[in-house]
Length: 112
Length: 114
Image (cartoon, rainbow over all chains, first blue to last red; front, side, top):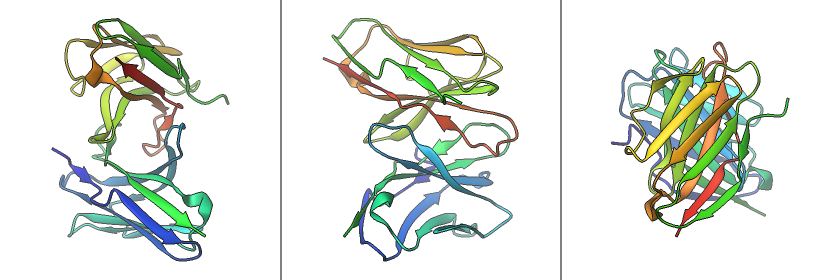
């Protein structure tokens, strides 16, 4: 069963606008969440993370929001740039082990 | 740092053949992870090691898959015999305690089994 779900396989956004990528989880033991970005023919690279004790973490154009009661997190990219076009993976960790549980990914395309 | 190194980058083999994928983690990292990426299931964790010891292999799909880490700088993932449904991109990643679970991924090996 998918404990981390990204229900939108793809998203298209115009350059300069906001991109919002969503992620839902089912395991209430998850207490640390990460977003990874993946370009074609490359491995995923770490983008931003958030601990369950926070509800928001910001790094430049990227902000992650966490709603623990809804078991939902989102990644906001403002403003979106063509170089942001990639697959974005949401991941979660229980804090008791080093392994991450990943979602299936959302392909973001930023158009001119 | 050179990052996580994987070889080969591409592998095409026939059903029934043995396949060996290789990984060199980042120096100083004490965790190593093997993942498989497919369209349907995204990134699946197959197995991970801590200080060269397998900790969790619950994601290994079946006995045809095996992984070893003989030392801190080398790991292999072997599939024997390979089947067409094993076709996927296999990633190796490494991390270090204290890095807030951030994992560093290699470029992956694209495996095609015909």
